[in-house]
Amino acid sequence: GGLPAQPNYVGPASQQGSLAGGRPLVVIRFDRPNVAYEEALYSAVSSALQRRPDATFDLVAVSPSQGNAAQAALGSSSARRNAERVLRTLTEMGLPPARVNLSAASSGDAGGSEVHLYLR
Image (tube, rainbow, N blue to C red; front, side, top):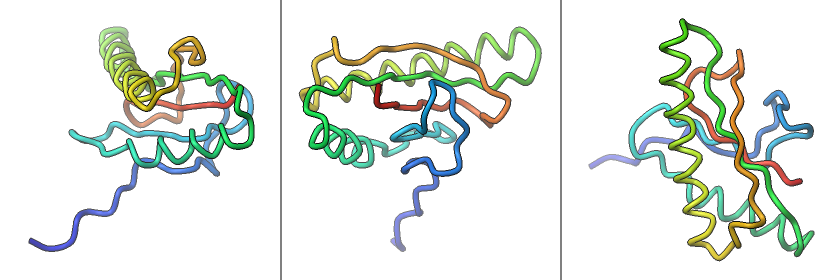
């Protein structure tokens, strides 16, 4: 069996550049299949809601800006699909969809499809 692989994907984003202004609460890197992001997402959202019960969130689908137009389009649709999955997870956790604003961006820093969650 062995130990589960250490997740390298999610966590409080300390060194991440800012897209939506401010630091993201969570950065989820979809750099492999079946990224287990739910626990980190849940704890980040829970603690944000404890501080600000009426908080709203920006969910940003981030795709790499390198590559040609076809690669960029592919990366962008993959990032959006991942963001929609994260949005579904948030609503399953009980967060009303009206409190999450979904958008897309591309970044030269993104190595692949990422989803960033910001407190608005």
